[in-house]
Length: 442
Image (cartoon, rainbow, N blue to C red; front, side, top):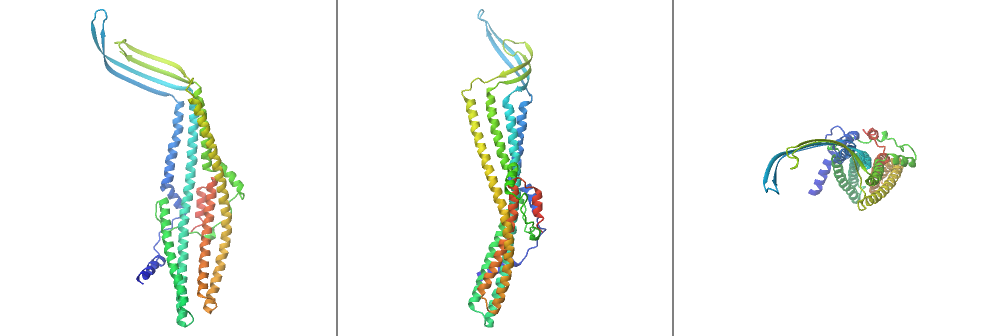
C-alpha cells in the first residue's frame, strides 16, 4: 500500500503540478542556435575551410618561386708537393650566396592539379550545404519529438482524469446499489494503467528535451506548440514527382559532391598522362662565392644567369601507364557512386512526396475519427449512466478517443517532417522553409 501511495503521489507531481515556464523557444530560434552550437556542423565548416585552401596551394604552382641560400665557413687545405715533398697548410674563409627565381612555363600536370583542387573545393562546398540542410532537419526532428512527447503526456493526463472520474462513478454506483465490485476493479485497473503510461511519457519527454539540447546547446522546458488551424495542408509545387526528381538531379548537394568526384578523377587521368610530356621552366639566378673550393682560394665570383630548362621522363618502368589505369578504375568507381546517389535521391523524393500525400489524407481521416470518437464516448457515458452500457464499454471508448488524438498528432508532425525532407532531398531547403513552419506554431 505504501508503494502504491508513493506512485500516486509521484504521478500527481508529474501530471498536475505545472512548472513556471520561460518564454517558449521557437523553431526558427532553435535552428539558429543549432548552427552556432552543433559540433557536427561546426566540424563540417572547419573541413570546408581546409579544403578550399587546396585552390590556393594549386594556384601557387603557376606563380614564381623565389629562393635564397647563404653559407659562410672556415676551411683548411693541406697540400703536398710531389717534387719537393713540401707540405703546405692553408686556412681560409669561404662564402656562398645565391638567389634563384624559377617560373613554370609549361607543365600540364599543374593545370590538372589546379582543376582537381577546384573540384575538391566544390565538393566540400556541396557537403557543407548538405550538412547545413541535415542540421535543419535534425533540429526539426528533435523539436517535433519533444512536441509529440508533450502531446502524448497531455493525452495521458486527460486519460488519467477520465479514468479517475470513471473510478469515482463506479464507486458511487456501488454505494447506490447499481454497480458491482467488478466495475470498480476494471476502473481501478484502467486508472493505474493510465498513471503508469503517463510516467513513461514523462520520461520520454525529458529524454527528447535532452536530445534537442544536444543539438541547440540549451535546455528548454517550453517550446512553441503546433497550431493546426495555421497549417497549410498542400503538396508543395510542382505537383509532379518526376519534376521534383529532375530538380534534385540539379540541386541535391550530395549528388553534386559525387559529380565533383567524377571531375576529380578525370583530371587525375590527365595529371598522370601529363608525366609523358616535357616540363619547361624559366630560371634566373645570381650567385656570389669566395674561396668556394681549394682551386679558388682568395678568389671571388659574381655569377648571373638566365636559362630555359626542359626536363622530360623517357621511361619510368611502366609507372605512368599503371597510374593512368589506376585513375581510370577510380573514375569508373566515381561514376558508379554518382549513379548510386541518383538512385537514392530519386527514391527519397518519391518516398517523401508520397509521405506528404499520405499524411494529408491521414490528417483528414483522423480529424473525422476524433470527432466520431468524441460523439461515441459521450453516447457511451450516457448509456452507462442509464444502465445500457458497461464500464468496459466506457473505458474502451475513452481509449479509442485518445488513440485517435495521438494518431492525429503524429500524422501532423509526419506531414511537416516529410515536407522538409522533400525540400532537403531536392536541394531546395532554406531558412524560409523553416520560418514558414515556425509560423504554424504559437
